[in-house]
Amino acid sequence: MKKILSFAFAITIALSASSQKIKVKQSTENIGGGSHNALSVTLIGISPSDAEDAFRSFMKTYDGKRSSKDGGIFIDHAMIKEMGNNTIDIYGKALGKKGDPEITFIVAFDLGGAFLNSGDHKDQYNVAEKIVKEFAVKATKDAIEQQLKDAQKIESNFEEEQKSLEKENKNLNSDIDDYNKKIKKHKTIL
Image (cartoon, rainbow, N blue to C red; front, side, top):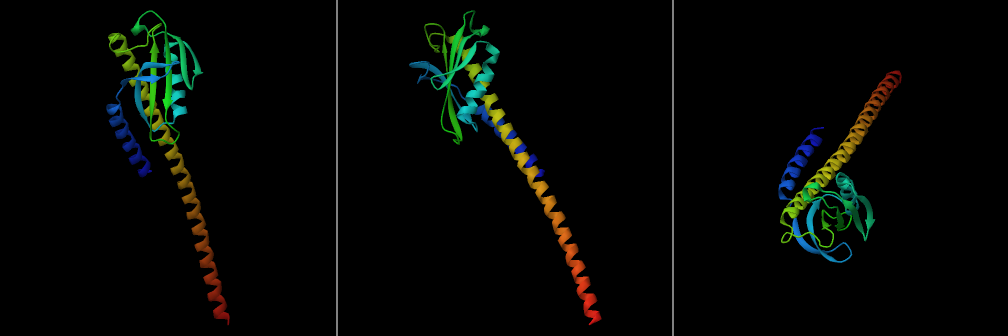
């Protein structure tokens, strides 16, 4: 139990440190049917498919129809009030392989004729950057919490196995005592 608690403490520290380290960067990426401006962020401890599932779930807040498209997630007609009264198409895609310690997640915002960039859409870009960072923190936190739950389950299984082995050991020691008594009794008879 102490090991799990120290593991939980270590995870909490790691999560706090990683959320401070999460940096959203602007780059040109192959997303949304071409080479477009996008925001990218590094996610730690999560598989690409889990990251895309997390993104799909995270984007429910902004309505829009969520679907899979071009190897990623597409949110059609999302409404982000902080970015204006027009709907936005959002593309999300995870880059990496299952088992990688970290992956890159890319998000592009199609404003309806132009993809969001910091030069032409400063205020909207700041909102988008905040959204992507919130997603990254939540996805990383959820992944770490799942790893903790998995570790706790493993520990619980080990504890049950230890109890079973201790009981078996006690029974075997009892058998040894009984056999020693029988041997001693037979020696006195002979």
